Length: 215
Image (tube, rainbow, N blue to C red):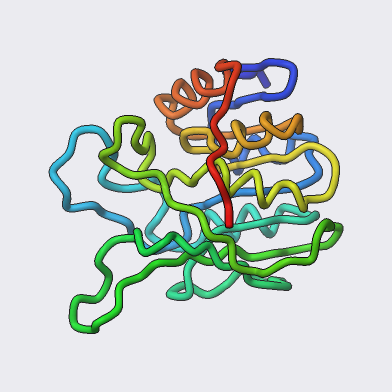
């Protein structure tokens, strides 16, 4: 396989993760996969895509996890069945910023779930709730991908991951790679859309990263 981008810590591959992941040597999987919510934004904007490839069902997520034999952290939602073998559920508290949700009830969504699979995680035994603001869509340095996750959140998760190479088979705009690089971890990203490979390569080529804060 020929990398789309590579430096001392990061390798990016452009292609279908179902075909490429079996050829990648990695130890930990950290990813936010398409998991069947059929995301489709009705907002009028040119900056972000309105939908996500493969988000009609959980087949992409489940296929990759079936082929993966190792520890993993996988983003998801209570609305969709959790991955088989989930050992624990972490909560990402988004500080109240996560869309409007069901307008017929007086609460709006302000969290997402992260599933822990496999073993080898270590570090300070703290709360399963991680509080960090999401990347805003319309800020000066706003989201580059509809489901972009904060680098600070990913870094906090990776700090408790087992040692070795981290792989993200649904890389998107590359936040997992940026977080891994900030922690001096080797990271491999796979992405089917070339425009996001370009974005991720540009982000990873920067020399300084702002991690923000996690509570």
